[in-house]
Length: 266
Ligand SMILES: C[S@@+](CC[C@H](N)C(=O)[O-])C[C@H]1O[C@@H](n2cnc3c(N)ncnc32)[C@H](O)[C@@H]1O
Image (cartoon, rainbow, N blue to C red; front, side):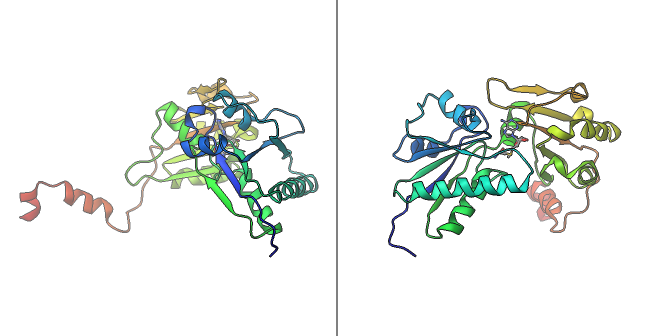
């Protein structure tokens, strides 16, 4: 422990693209005194998270700073980039001013923020972290496409498609709805699987939901061979899934509750 007073690190979820989906809490923080940090894939490249707030009408403060998080699986490059980003964040927090890190979608869902906050706290355990929750890409995609992700006792899984089609195939037997994130490198393989499972007609593809470039593809087979954007996902529903018995008798209790009073009492 030191006597130094560090600023707070705030992860502000901005929703997946439509500035109207920025929460009031995030909006308040963005308009406050905290210094902005935003993620980019390469130095001086555009930031999708930053574009959400600028489309919402906010000006980027002159002292806003980018942090570079390269899109690579190279462990050495990643480790160096993370160390640099965390070290710079700690340096800025040591000035005593709060930092707000701009997060696309929800900050607790497959987001850079969780990792950044963890590394920062490893370096300086006393740093206070606040996570402002937000609208995830798949919640917005479901709303835009009129898809119900789950109701009653249905099951829902959210996974990165990178686990591969064998895993997705297996999960289709366990879940009524699958949300496949990071689907870009596997689109063709997923389409083959959906065709085999006769689920093409209950699947939907959504790219850059909520942004001016939003694209919804219901005829998912038409995507075959296409290079899609990284910011894209698939919602897959399996209406043919065989469900097991519910352990706690939810269905039974519900059926009893729905019976007319006299019948139930008889
Ligand atoms: C690193 S994860 C970020 C998830 C994000 N934090 C969220 O709450 O949705 C990136 C993946 O999320 C999905 N994604 C994020 N933003 C999206 C958008 N605007 N439209 C469609 N998919 C999106 C894509 O599958 C993308 O590959």
